[in-house]
Image (tube, rainbow, N blue to C red; front, side):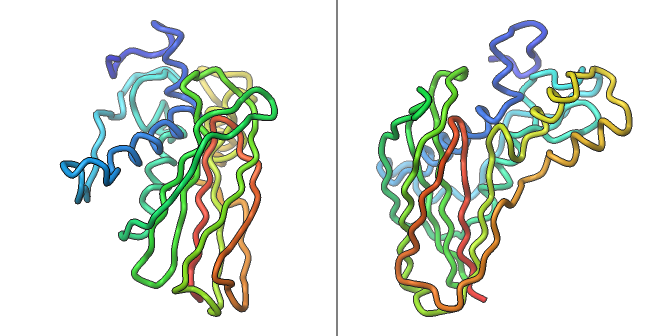
Length: 227
């Protein structure tokens, strides 16, 4: 999968432009951090064989974090999401999900605790078929005794076709190869990691439960921060 080849040479490389690549990277990172393999324990830094290529066409589909006009692609938001949780790994269990619209895949989770006593969990819905689409119900239960009884702030971030996705914004503008300044501004408005929910609890219960509708592919980060 050469880094410099894109969708104009191989159509299947379109996945590099979309939310699929971001969700795949979250799943891959969790696998690399798995404590089932003692050789992989203690990973503290990750890098990527990717770069920004001058002269690329808009949304070229090369293995890079930015496309033309230095617009961040959705996979960049996967890295931003991975940078937000704490440094201490917590136990997380997940399983298969049934897609309501034929988009069922593998539900995965990565949970951590922070030095401030807070916690975070990343949950994703992935299907190896890059063209599979749909939505699945995910029941999330996060138990973190360190937050029990304390006032907390709960924030939710999303990556899917509708959130944190410059590619979707570009498609809706008609796939311009030479975007106008106004179009670039519209695309940039969707290139960052988007927060979709922000709430405060005066007293955190021992277990926080919620039900999410998670697209495939899609990912959500739930952060629990003591106030």
